[in-house]
Length: 453
Image (tube, rainbow, N blue to C red; front, side, top):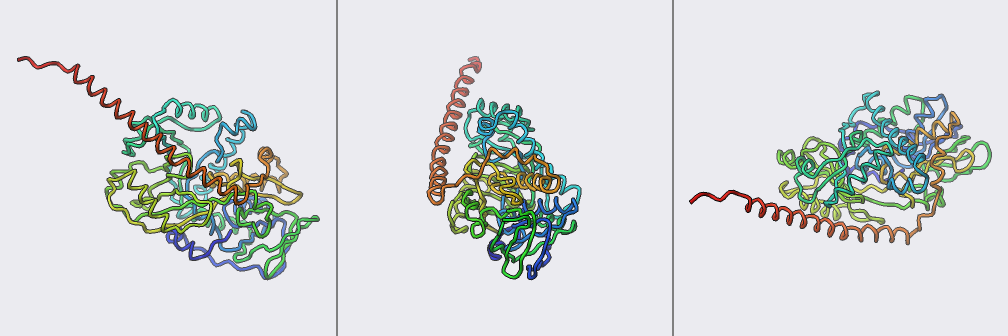
């Protein structure tokens, strides 16, 4: 829900956002059919879907629209979930996993369709996502791709040579290329969603935190600083910012911050070094995720933390990551650096559905937020108005305590522990590649014809 406005102003997204109208505080009592708490991507999608079906909707936002993770993320619109597909199949079975994957693809299509059908300004969609391996285990990469195809993913294998043709980095080997994925300006998408919701009749109240909620009875009661609201349905879409209102629900999410830099313009050398215009990830964890924005700037994300950290200090580490991977870029200066805090569940799947009569939750989107927020909004909108039960496909992923401070410490330790392991695996792969290259050179020299005396 909320972050301070000075934090928001530090993002490249904010400096390149479309105009946002001033929205009032709620300073009177109001009755509606649905109250949505949180004006992020999930909350705005729910509000739009419900209003377009003819119901009255009010959205309460403690800060401004999309001030938190919805307007501060990497902008990657990807299929799938934060959880590994093998874990999903193991938990719910193959047929159920295929249905969940199809829903994730539907969420991706929702974002694309919304942008295209409404000619949404400033979103700048760019196709493709390349998920690169930094080891030479092509057999594992191909096996992962085959499993994903079996589930229903539109994904293809890229060889090491094809990857390095567009991203000349000796640390890179084979990759999975997701043709249906794309990347966008997420803040402008969220602001566009807010405008569409208001066009459908939604009333959005900014600077209006929900202080108390009484979920009993047919009409739930929500207290704000200057007004009260009553509604038979309440949607909790505030993610990790719900701690003061619903501490038990907030405790099921692990707050994870990642950091993002956008460079100053890098000039013509950027086109020579990074020739792929889609989104790029070269890890299964926080490091590194990047894309080209604004024509000749590089946006780079990584360096997970489970507590607050100074973005500028982390930004220097991100610049070091850029130079380590692409030294030929030369001097890299930071134009913007910020952090975004997302909510991650223990099982790494989103929280979607009715947790008690008339009280709905849409959260836990850490890892694949843009497609799953859209999917959740559509599912909950249909669940409320049409009594559609598709959201129950997420019932196996119950609300689980995230472990509090020990849980945060454990997650941070896993991340820190994985970095040297991945680094060593990558180094060994590069050594094997150099050894193969030397062996091939020796064989070629032995086979070369000897010049006549």
